[in-house]
Length: 415
Image (tube, rainbow, N blue to C red; front, side, top):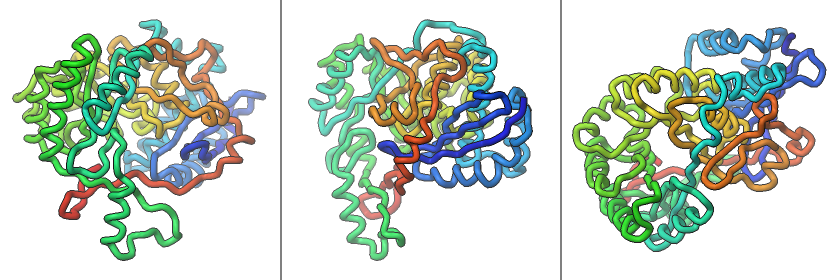
């Protein structure tokens, strides 16, 4: 069996996705993967089309590990989000082919089920504590047992995960910065204004309110989104201890791995980290020193199922659970890959999920299904997802960027 073609399909049914379709010389046998990198989709598509695809023609798609090593180590300049996302798309498509050829779902090839469904979490947000409470109650009524809670911050303009006034902030900064519109007349990033002081006062108050109103049975947690300094993060984690969070997510930048030692000294709040990691070597110090409780890499940005399984097995040894990244800016194939791993791993913890618009299901069918707090995949061979190429062509790429953030004085801040 040989690879005969690698198709890279860029489509935008509600948002941009990069799809990899690997065809073989066996009639009707192909694999589908996701290589979406939000805000830099065309960089990945170009890497796949111009550099990676030519290397794969004529190779045996069954040799997943060998192809992975070739693409990772053969660049010499290894890693980074663009190349690792491209590699993830290839890797997932190859696992899809392997499952189809074997007549088995991928979770079976990974060792088989260890559970009947993957515990899922969703997002709740609002402009104040009352709105967040209402959203949490709505998600609880939908069966969710784990919920991420985000709240708009008084005095800040636009808040990650809570909606708000990002457009107003964008207009403010655009008017203050001559020449800030893009040269092709396309959209510019939305800009939020963020200050740590109001944030550090608001979040403990939010969780105090939630515990007083929705109780202690529901699992709650919060995403900092890597915006705090280590000592600020230590303060927040310590102040959140009375509210028994499921975990505190990504509280410092990925460059600050050593600073997790400081966090552990100051708090018993469980810690999760990893959505901006690209290889297992970024994860290893945090796992082996037991500085985190959940590793939450994005399978679509660390090289796919092959790398994620290795990271999970390292983590199992040190009592670290998985919580793979699962936002709306990765395609259904990566979400399905998440759940295949979730079902097979002994140290699975929880899975982020989103509900795709109907148009995405039409163009990219086969996303995981949700029921009463759990995710599952169909017992069909392979990953279980596909791409309708004819329909995908009706939704061309639309230029888009991730938001940006600035401090009140105008200086650039991490979003």
